[in-house]
Length: 341
Image (tube, rainbow, N blue to C red):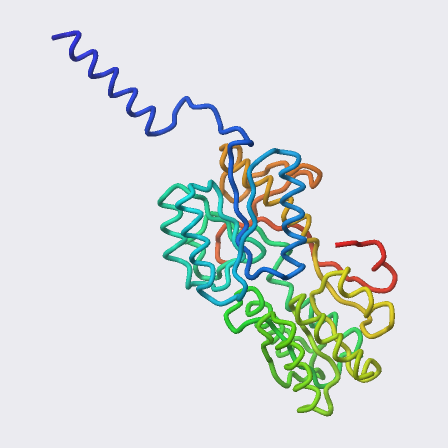
C-alpha cells in the first residue's frame, strides 16, 4: 500500500511538471515560428519590415512567414489569424487593420498558446487583448511631429488638409487626433487652418483621386499631411504632375526609396519616417526571447536585440507595455541618399 501511494505521488509530480513545463529547456530558436500579418500586401513599407524580420531570422534561425490580405479592411486579417492558430505558430505579429474588430480572434489565439504582438502600432483602449505592442516610434508624438514638419515649410500659416489611410486605421486615426490637438491647442500653429481629413484607403489610385479632389475643391490649399507611405507618394506625384510644388507643400510618412525623386526635383522639401527594417529586426529578436522566456511583458524589463543593442519595455499612456524602436526622422535633400529602404 505504501508503494502504491508513493507511485501515485510520483505520477502526480510528473503530470504537474508536464503541464507547467517546469524543468524543460527553453525552445531553441530554430524551433520557434513567427508570422507577420500585414495590413495589406503590395505596400513597400511592409516589405521593408519583412526584410528586418529576415535579417533577424538569418542571425537567430527561427521560422518566419509573411502574410496579409490584398485589401486592408477591418476583418480581412481574420483568416490569417485563424490559420496561424491552427498551425500552432508561436508568435503572431500583426499590423491590425482595426483597433477592436479582431479582439475575439486575438483572445482565441492567446488561449491556444500563441503570443499576440501588435506590430507597427497598437490597439488603443483594447490592449487587454494582446501581449505586447512593438512600435516604430513614439506614436503619441507623431501627430505633433507631422504638424511641425508641415508648419516649418509653409511658415506656419495657411489652409491645410490631411490625406490619411482608411477610416478604421488605428495608427493613422490616432495620429490625426494628435494633429488636430496640436493645431487647436498650440499657439504656434494658430494660423494653420485644417480644411478637411480625407481617406485614400492606402490604395494608390484612390489616394491620387482624393488628392486631386482636394486641389480642385480648395484653391487656397497650402499644404497636405499624408501620414501613410502610399498616400504621401500619391499626393507628391499629383503635385509634381500638375506643377504645383511652388504652391502646395506635401509632407508625410514616406519611404526614402519612393520619395527620393520628389526630394531631388524639389516637389517635396522634407518628409518623415522611422526605420521599418529596424522595427522588423527588433520584433524578430523580441519574439524569440519571449517564447524562450528570456524576456516577458513587464514594464521596465530590458533585453538585447542584436545590432540594436539593449531595449527597454516602456509604458504607454494607458498603462500597458510597449517597445519603441526609434524616434521619428526627417528626410530631406541633405540626407536622402544615405538611405536605401
